[in-house]
Length: 415
Image 1 (spheres, one colour):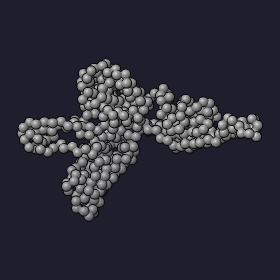
Image 2: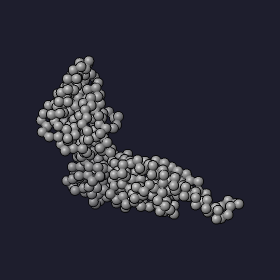
Image 3: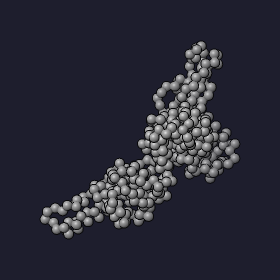
Image 4: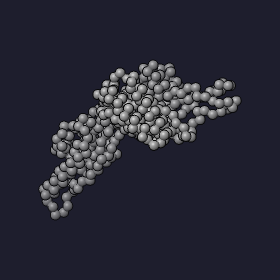
């Protein structure tokens, strides 16, 4: 079982991506969201009404498709004894496969979070927004960087850093201008510093108060001393936000480039969040590469081999990895070949066609999801599985430079 982004979540996301890629020729794809408090007889009556209204659709092709999809839903509901606790979602209809052909989609999903409202949609695409929103990482941290020259306000939303506002100060330097007494200069400088802190507090409060209180887990303040200490002690934030300050941290930069530095400095405080855990694992991976310890492995074949001998301690898989191994075979001469099919690429992949040996038709005999295969091997070898986001630099490198598959080994396996 994956610790950060579970395999079940990966499978769910993959199903949504598949559904998102499909479309109908017209408004004939049905999305049905059923909440747990809905009565099955009421749903059946509603779908029968929709079936009757569909008889008024002018296009015979569309009319038949919509009524066929509704018939399929009605048949499924008759065998449903009880709505699951989190609700249930149906997607059904005839999708366009090109060359004036269609194929029928019938997908049933139990959502990761409860369905809030009953919803029926008939459109040319499936309505997936509520399910995609359920997968969104909702833990949010406010980020404030400041010194006496500038301040930057942002948020850590899930694993993504968002820059919200950058402020410049009018605080004069420590050298007073001619004609001013030292006392007068210090007074004016103190007023300018106070006004700048107030501007920072107002801008941060405006940004962070828009976030649901339950979602805003805390606020991190970074920058140079003594500015960050003075800002925090002066309580320039809204009183509800002041209670959420988790700590003050030294950073060398106070523009947006300092956000990563702030998060790294606060990693002990943020020990529990996914981004910090993933960063730590990727740091270990790159450290082992740099020291040439032999305790890392990357690439599909090498990692599989180490998984098979149970040498893997941590399996690193990119959240963006979408890869299948397809086996094609000729039933006449026995020719067989395996190829990798990757999603989210424009690469043409001939899974059928003619046999290069005897010119007979090739058949697809097996399709294996690489992530599923590796997760199963990791479970058997008691390896910890980490699904790594591409929302930070090291995570992007895992996908781009290492093909989205890597491992930290228990020992130098030499594979």
